[in-house]
Image (cartoon, rainbow, N blue to C red; front, top):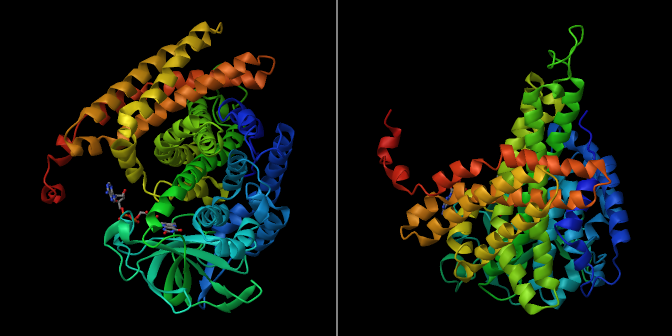
Length: 591
Ligand SMILES: Cc1cc2nc3c(=O)[nH]c(=O)nc-3n(C[C@H](O)[C@H](O)[C@H](O)COP(=O)(O)OP(=O)(O)OC[C@H]3O[C@@H](n4cnc5c(N)ncnc54)[C@H](O)[C@@H]3O)c2cc1C
C-alpha cells in the first residue's frame, strides 16, 4: 500500500544541524516565530499531506486532468483536497503578513513543500508555480498590482503560472516571439502562442494569474529585449473581484509520460489584456531573480519522489518473501529485505535521499541568510553560496530522484513494472524533473561557466575549504566508524579539487562544457558525503537516541559505497572534448 509517512524526524534534524534554523529565527521579521511553533506547524503539515493530499496521488495518475471544449477539468478528489489546502492556510505559510501570509521563514516553507511534493508531485506544482508568481510580484510588481493580486495568490484563492516556453524558445528564451503593445489606458495587449504551461488552465480556483514573457515593439533582440507581464485569465471588476474573461484560449493539454494530474497546456494569447511588471526589457532579469527559488524547489521534487519510492520499496521488501537468507532455517523463507543485494538497494536509496535533503536545505537556508542576515558581508557570502549550490541542488537531486525511483521498481521485481503497486508511477513522475526549470545539462553549464569562476574561484574555494575543515572534527571523534568516513571524504574531496582546478584552468571552452555534467555529479556526490558526515557527528553528540545512531551507519554506507565514484567522475570530468567530437556528426549515423 503506497501510504506516505512524513519523515519529520529527518526533516527536523536537517533544519537544526544543517540549515541552522535556530539562527534564522533570530533575524528581524521572525519575532513571532519560535522553535516550538515551527515544530508544531511541521507536525500538522505532515499530518495534512499524509491524510489529505497523498491519497489523491493515484487518482491523479489514473484519471488525470482532462481537456474538453476549451477547458481543463481536474479529478473531483483534487477539488476537495485543494479547497482544504486553501482553507487550512498551507499556501500562506511564508507569505508576507501584510498580504495574508503567516510570515514563517522560507526554510520552514521549504520543509512544508517537501511534504507536499512527496505526497503528490503533480498536484503540488500548482502551489509551486503560485509561489513563483508571488515572489515575482512581491519583488518587482507595482504597488497597484500587488494590492490587487498578491493577497489572493498568497492565500491560493487564485493560482499563478510561469508562461515562458514557445515552440522555438525552450532552453534559449532569447528566441521568444510573443508580442506586447501598449494600449491607450496604460495596459498592454499580448499576442502569441505558448506551450508546456503547467497548470495553465484548471477548475480549482476562480482566477489564474499568468506571468508571461513577451517583447515590446522597440525590444532589442535576444534575452535583453524580453519584458514580463501579468495577464489574468479573468480581468478584475471595479471591486477587485473576478470580472470578464480575458482573451486567452486553452488550445490543448499534452499527453505525457507522467505527472498526469498536472495539466500541461498550450495557451494562445489573442489581444489579451496584460500589465507590465517592473521596467520594460527587464523580464529575464526578474525571472532569474526568482529562478534560484524555483530550481531549489524542483530539486526538492527529485528528493520527494525518491523518498516516496523508498518508503514503498521498504514496506514491500519487508512483506515479500523469497528464498532463504544466509542462516535462515530450511523450513522458512526470508523477507527479501534480508538479502544483501536488496539491502544494498534500500541503503543506496536511503543514503542518497538523506544526502540530497541536507544539500537542498543548506541551499535554502543560505538563500534565507542572503536576504535576512543582519551583516552585509554575511549576506554576500550567503548569496555566493546560493548561486554556487543551486545548479547542483537542482540537477543532482533530480538525477538522483530518477535513479532512485528506478531502484524502487527493482526492489519490487516484476511487481515494480506492474502499475498497481504505484512504484512505476513514481518513476514516470520523476522523469520530468531533470528537464523543466532549466534542463540538467543547462544547470551543469551554468555551474562550470558562471559559478566556478565567481570571485575568481573564491566562492567554490571557500566551500571546498569548509568540507576540508570537517576532517579535524572527524579525526577528533571517538567512534571508529568515523575513520572510514574521514578517509574516503578526504580522498573524494581531493578528486573534486583536482577537477575544479582543471576546469578553471582550461582554455578550450568545449573541454569545460564537455566535462560539465560529470563535474556536477562529482560535486553533488562529494557534497552529499560531507553533509552525511556532519549529520553523523551531530548524531554522535546526541547518542542517547538509537534512531540518531543510524545516521552514522548511513554516512558509513555512503562513504564506502557511493563516495568512491568520485575517482571515475574525476576522470570523466577532466577527459576533455576530444572524444566527444572525434566522430563527425554525419558519421554518428553510419552503422
Ligand atoms: C511537463 C512539462 C512542464 C513544463 N512546464 C513549463 C511551464 O510551466 N512554463 C514554461 O514556460 N515552460 C514549461 N516547460 C518547458 C520546459 O521548461 C522546457 O521543456 C525546458 O526548458 C527545455 O526546453 P526544450 O524542451 O525546448 O528543450 P531544448 O532546449 O530543445 O533542449 C533539448 C536538449 O538540448 C540540450 N541543450 C539545449 N541547449 C543547450 C546548450 N546551450 N548547452 C547544452 N545543452 C543544451 C538540453 O539540455 C536538452 O537535453 C515544461 C515542460 C514540460 C515537459
